[in-house]
Length: 320
Image (cartoon, rainbow, N blue to C red; front, side, top):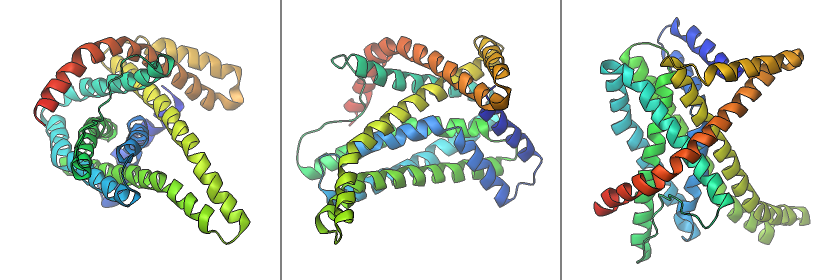
């Protein structure tokens, strides 16, 4: 197990013996939220495309409505379902977590595949309707909230699996705090990213000092690079986290390949540089988890694009 995952598990173990106070629940939620990094970064990287083509004055209201829809997804639907699962069918959590991990692997691998083969088909949840601006806005928001539901389901399942054992109230509190915190962080970051170029343009046009105007112009020019960087980081995080979830899920279910070979390779590599053993163990494990996730994701692409995507389109667009 990687150093990062081991550290988080150790902290979660310590948290199990702590009193279920408000501070404890908040701490548990924060630590559990760390394990949802892949889906969180993907959410932040994907959301800005939903405001493309709209007037700058509509960007923040659109993001706000998507964020509110995300909170409702998490608190009104996914949180009760998660609590029911943990109470009556805890054995389903690991398979559902692995299903979410497989989806992360697919999403990351599909993006890599699209870069390598840009003319090939991609499964894009975003809708591209035609019509008046108000209808376009409503359609974009509806499409974003649908996509968010999938990502939120992954996030809430990961958080639920990472929370230590406790009362149903502690779990509910941890899920709510982590879910709201992640939503605020993600859509707050998205709002900053979306408005950053407008801020840079304002500085470039109205800055009193030459240095300020140059900084604003540089900010505008840097935004395309930032968006590409976010997509790269988000893709790598999805593949790594998705692969790690699948590998650890198989291990917990009694199938110890490829968990044990990866563990041995990482341990052998760390022994070569004992001064940085912890980091090397984590880095090698993460890299091999990512390779596994990428291979698995590529294998899932034909199934997702040829079978699942047409069914998804028929069901959801037919009900639109």
